[in-house]
Amino acid sequence: MEEEIINFIQEYQDINGTYIHTYDSPPTPVEFLRNCVHPNRPAVIKNAISHWPALKRWSDDYFREKMGESVVTVATTPNGYADAVTYDPNTDREYFVLPHEESMPFNDFLDIIQGKRNTPHAHYISLQNDSLHTEFSALKDDIDEEISWCSEALGKKPDAVNFWMGNDKSITSLHKDPYENCYAVIRGEKTFVLIPPSEYYCLHESTFPTAIYSPSMDLTPLDPPTETPWIPVDPLHPDLERFPRFKYARPIVVKVKAGEMLYLPALWFHQVLQHGDEGVIAINAWYDMDYRNTLYPSMSFVRGLVHRCL
Amino acid sequence: MEEEIINFIQEYQDINGTYIHTYDSPPTPVEFLRNCVHPNRPAVIKNAISHWPALKRWSDDYFREKMGESVVTVATTPNGYADAVTYDPNTDREYFVLPHEESMPFNDFLDIIQGKRNTPHAHYISLQNDSLHTEFSALKDDIDEEISWCSEALGKKPDAVNFWMGNDKSITSLHKDPYENCYAVIRGEKTFVLIPPSEYYCLHESTFPTAIYSPSMDLTPLDPPTETPWIPVDPLHPDLERFPRFKYARPIVVKVKAGEMLYLPALWFHQVLQHGDEGVIAINAWYDMDYRNTLYPSMSFVRGLVHRCL
Image (cartoon, rainbow over all chains, first blue to last red; front, side):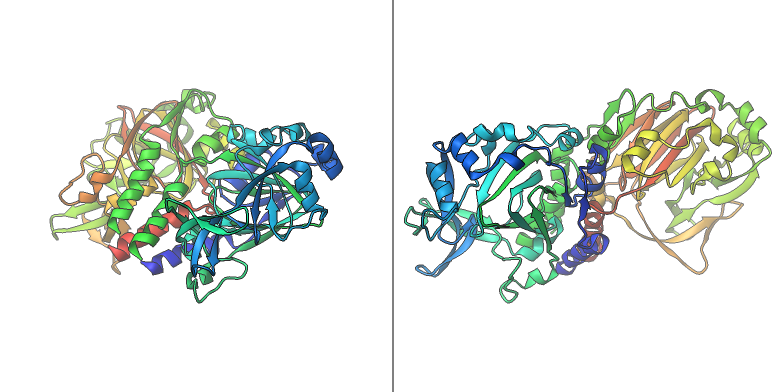
């Protein structure tokens, strides 16, 4: 049966290769549905957000003025890996580790990012759950309320719009979301490592005890103990001895620059890295995926086979 | 592993049920992509062909005048089943049986359909391969060249437009096509029995020796012998002792009346019956399916598992 799974992965690869289309301007709703959403293929879209005031306005001075005193939630880790599988030398075990969530005035976060406050840790504004309209609502008029051609294509409004700000230290480990994702970089650059849903088998997902970083960055197992299924493999530096199935994966590495948008299709696995001296800023809009076609049950099926039959 | 396949089938059913949407007028290209093509769900579309001259013009008199002398290809079988698994009492074996293809003036075919010429056999104009533009090109101005909203949605022209004419005797056995299919009934009524791609396991597809009807309707094995994979189960009268997996299938029965169109999504299994005293006429447009998303490799995968691992 393993051979059949590998055939499936390779048939998808044979049809699609690792090509990612770049649009020089936003696609029409029909083009977006036809060539991105329906094929479930990523794309880079240039000039989709050129008209957003955020691109000009969002300086650190502007942030300090607009909401410097506002308290924001910051994910803090010793190594930049929040929501990631992490080896704990003290217990000689691997945990799925949640970040320490700190509340601080936005000014303090900016001090950290600007290097005015020394910290050995990684700090990342990555709250999600529509953070633009909760903690960052003072900034909401600086961007469009929705991605118009995406909303028109999908026939719905975004489920959540999130504000992200961090630096090179922070890395989002490989995972997937059940959302169509329009991800716009406002400042700096992000690198996305993308892996199609069909390559689930390659990723050695397994279940880890869950821990959380304490304020002093000690790794503390949750009480009561909780298990979390997560992907342990680093797609850019895979340990092929531990994760031999990863040899069948064909990761796609996409760099998204300030002013560009990535369409990240539902259920695609993605790792995200960021680059930039000043703090990398991004906005993403999540749209609920359509569960009606065969993609979702197919992927549950493959997952079930991998875990119960191999 | 069988349990996983059944879970997959049932997860798809839990999400989708057996609902088929009926549009009172053609969807826009965006609606069609969003709610039909992308979810890979059938729909009935009313008033999509009301403006086709064919609806008024296509009488038998008109056919006789326009192309009565033209030679057309007619699929002839003793029982109405062309391209179907058929039991041969002489050899006590089942064959996949091709029809006898007769060439005759269209007038002769009309005589048969009108009962002016007695025949115990079933005769069906079902040539496919763009028959409207080959044998029936005299009629092509009576319908639109393409289904405009479908062509605009898919960004392509139809790959083939076919003319179908037959009567209650002819039944198209369960099969699938790698095409998005817009199927318009011009006269009479057609019943489609639809089964989603996810239910492949239920259909007991297997391989049969191929035979063809001779002009005298004898069943003649092909020489050299040829094997054809085909579905032996009749979805309206399933023999559950022989085909126990069919109990997991949830066939959807859709009646399409004159003037209505069925959107039959790529890779859906369909059986087609027809009803009408005067000869049932239909036109269908096939559009190449998009192979890029996970549907096609997923279905190959399920097929491989069913045949090599069960």
